[in-house]
Image (cartoon, rainbow, N blue to C red; front, side):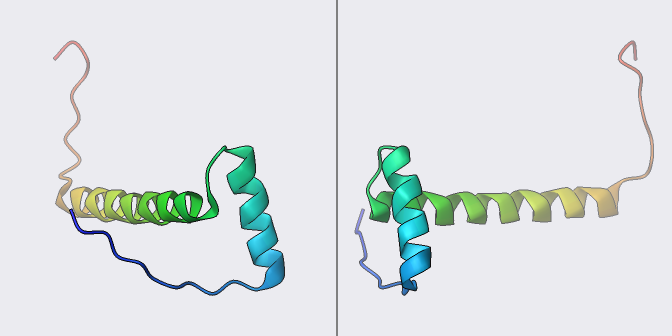
Length: 66
């Protein structure tokens, strides 16, 4: 799998905040930001799937016994 390098700009306070959390998690700055971005994308996909399921919901419910 090819890896791509991109540039993301942070001001000094943002960089320091992220760097501190990355160090606390035992990760590099780059890995921390990469994982955070991927987690955000996964959250957004989950929300979209949930909203689609709600739109198709016919309100039918079944008990655990059923």
